Length: 361
Image (tube, rainbow, N blue to C red):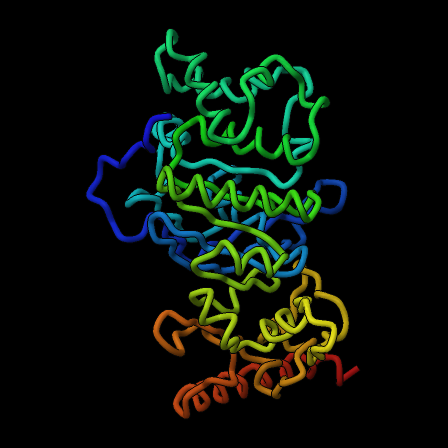
């Protein structure tokens, strides 16, 4: 199979830059379906991914991981922010420019059962977009699809078969082959192994790593399985209720987690030693609604280290050590504490002012 297409622009260290990305979904009510609120699925996320590296994105179900990945690919419109792919703003592209960009940015979906058309044979599923984008000449099409299938561990005779004839692991290989066939540079892996058996998960993870080495791919690997993320990722971002609360190189994050939410997640990782007693941190309550998130730090309602300031002022996402970012008031400097306290007093004054009219009744 041909090498991955290279960018025609001057190569930058970072292939993808996400800046303050916001994606809200409107909540409509009433006869006229007016917008009464918003589900804040992604609420100001920023990160960068270097070329030929993997960033893991972890967090509880419903925290906005998949929405973030799909918005980055412009599968849905943003509310605010920007996504810079190889120096180009994805949301500034025209319809035709976006179509030209599409082969370079692909996605592998979570469910291999529902992401494949049951009416098409495997060869056509993998080759449909290849033909549409003119990746190879018509005379080379069949051999090209065979090579892509071979790289993904799929025998050539699978071409004439249909998705219902395959197991979950084989279907996910087909999904990976479909993405790889367009010679992409960047792939969003949206929980690609969560629907598979553990033994099959390892095979798919190893396949993704081998493909990355061979074709120089860059991944955004979305998952809630921290053991898998630790194995495949170069950097890791931790999301909570639409926000990135911590981001660092994988080794640094697992050795020295800073945010209380990250510590709680890591304490739940199973350890293959029956005599080892993990100091488990139990999070109280459930994740709040993204339609009505708490004021201040969104995690304060479940945090065992919560301070009064956390209830009123959102912490800033800042660099604590080289390449290790965290959003938590525990690491405020004296100046930051003074500014946050001033902001808290204003918030408390606003709350008191809002109560006054009702006290006259």
